[in-house]
Length: 410
Ligand SMILES: Cc1ncc(COP(=O)(O)O)c(C=O)c1O
Image: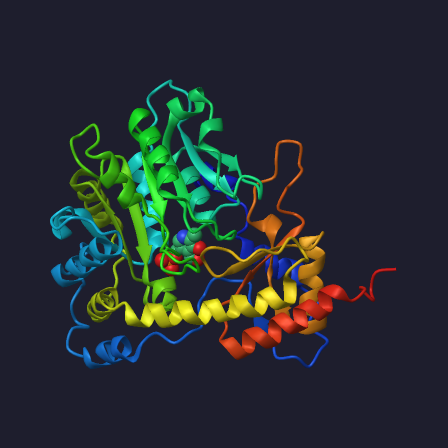
């Protein structure tokens, strides 16, 4: 009765975490610190929340699936500003699709891109390892076989594009790439994006640039984006600048507002037109009042600069506590720490039990190799999403607990 593909979906990492911690309640008086999920706890700007509260007259209307013109224009203006695109490079009404959180958009684009010809080998979906779980779930449910591209500290935590076999690229229909990467925080440079887009055009697959952390960077210059690669390469096989490319951007991280469920994807008019057709049936849309507030947020950069400054200060704290230990490095972007603690599950259980600090075992974000080994096993992922004071307290406690001998291990 149920779709057989569902059986391929493992439990989501947070379900696995709940299982791991069951029966290991904290035995400390510390206030629990939830650092396991990338859910920013900074306050979104008042002007956006006030706009939602003031918008009282439209809850009797279905929001348009394609978003409002004002929202699409604000999204296009944001991309144009952020990536210095020439005026007119992006048609807001043909190339922007507001989505109910980019998780929705990332899932739906797999249904657009993946198609299996009768009797042909199964199409492939490429993604980095570690990976955002939605790439995997979307690929499987669309009928593709996921291929996990290895990453390592030595390779700057990005997949080696030159190492992807030609036979793999020939069967590829979608490639998800995240920059800054979750969890490692590495940013792809322009040359990397250009190479990825060139491969997409040469082998006719869709490159999905998940840039949800692109505003959270700690380098002198903002990270390069896939839109800049499109600009540098020029139009693709169908004669459009955004051929073979979808960009994904969200207010969840940029504006610390995951509860809004508001993001957008951008692409060629053909891709976005197809997505709009598909979404007319699926129809997860953001309420009108939220679309209005979203447009205000995309047009404002000041609150984002303040947010970035806060994360920088949290990394200053992490530098002091972890430098020289656990393979710590200060990431170029994002809001995670990716620490090698030897045994990620054991450390996660212990941090929860001894200090009420919840983190995520790295192995829950990585795919084991065919021999069962899992390179993510030694790691934990820590999301620096609590406010500054709470983050400082939690990281200080974490450093103490990790450095102390485990009293429960003989
Ligand atoms: C890599 C990555 N992509 C996409 C998302 C989706 O964010 P949202 O659906 O809130 O826009 C997340 C959220 O954690 C993420 O980490």
